[in-house]
Each structure stands twice: as structure tokens, then as C-alpha cells.
Image (cartoon, rainbow over the protein chains, first blue to last red):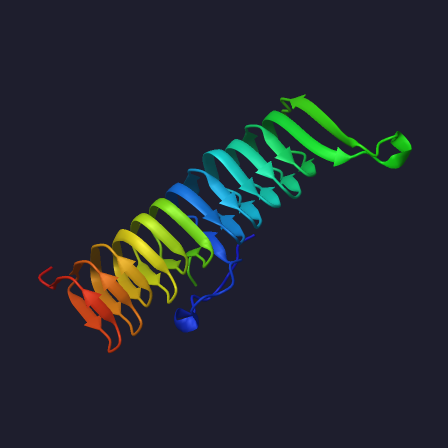
Length: 142
Length: 104
């Protein structure tokens, strides 16, 4: 998921979907923003995004809470994750913490230990105009 | 190509350290160190001490700056702090308040 871009010095304010923490970079502190973020390096601290978060292969994020829209993890996440969109753990991902998401997909080869919590609308044929909730205590190891 | 980009709309409160280069177009409060070039773009707000190989500023920077090679303050830059580098340029249209030390 490496993204290539030019710095474009005098471009001024660019759109907020560009943030990128390179593999040689280490961030310690709080990150928040409106756009997307790709982490290839190391982050220690809470992350709050309106956009999507990608934790690339080889990247690590250690934090109390991570909040974003769609979340794609191929690296390591330690901490609780709250996503308003879909969550995807790719093969090679290591995740430790509680995960709350819209939909959660765990690929073969991903490692996850924690609690999964998904909230969704039950389809009408299952009698659900009301909101259903599925909780799975998972300590999945593959 | 910049390896690390803090885009507009992103705020980081804390410390960033990288062995490569970095572009800041958003907001950073804390501390920033990079082995290669640091670019603070127009519209960026940085309240941090900055250490880098070279530094180019077109945005707002409050903090002390040390660069191994050079510091370039471009037109539109607003810098408050001390600058320490062997080569320093301040373009027409840049605002600067602080000390310059070229005895590195």
C-alpha cells in the first residue's frame, strides 16, 4: 500500500487524504485528523481519524485507542480499535486489543487476540427491525 | 518523494523522529527530528523544536531550529525562534524573529 507522491513545495494546502508515516519514522504522541493516514513506521499514541487508517506490513501502532473509518491492518496493532467502517486484518497482521467495527474481516494468517464487537441491523426475515448485536469473545490464533 | 507526510487536516501532538525526510502541511506540536530534509509547507503550523539535515519553511514555525546543512525561509514563512545552520537564507517576504547562528 505504499503511496508515491511528490512533495510539491509551493502547492500550499493539499487535500487532507495524504498523510503518510514512512518506514523510518517514529511518532510518539497524539495523532488526529480529517483525512486518511498510512502508517509504515512506528506510532505510539492515540490515533483519531475521520478517514481511513492503513497499518502497512512491518508497521507498528501501539496505543490505548485507535478511532477511524475503514481500517486495514497488515502490520501490528496493540490497542483498542473503534472503526465506523469496515475492518480488515490481512495475512501477517498481529492485533491485540478489543475491536469494534461495522464489519470485520480476518484473513487466514492474521493473528488476533481480543474481543470483537459488531453492531448491525438484523434482516427483516429474522424478525429484526431492531438492532441486533453480535459479540464474540475471540482469541483466534491461526 | 517524501517518505513521511503530515498532510493538511492532520494534527500531531508529540514527537516525530525519522531517518528520512518529512513534509509537514498540517499541524505539529512537540518535537521534530529528521536525518534528511524537513519541509514545512505553506499553511502548516509547527510549534516544535526542529532538527534536520536541511530545512525549508514556507509555513508558520515557532521553535528553535538546527540543521546540519542549511535553512531556507521562503516567502510567506513566519518563523519565531533561533536558527542554527552553516547556511541560512531568508527570502524577501519571509517573517523572522530570532537569532541566527552560522558558527556551526
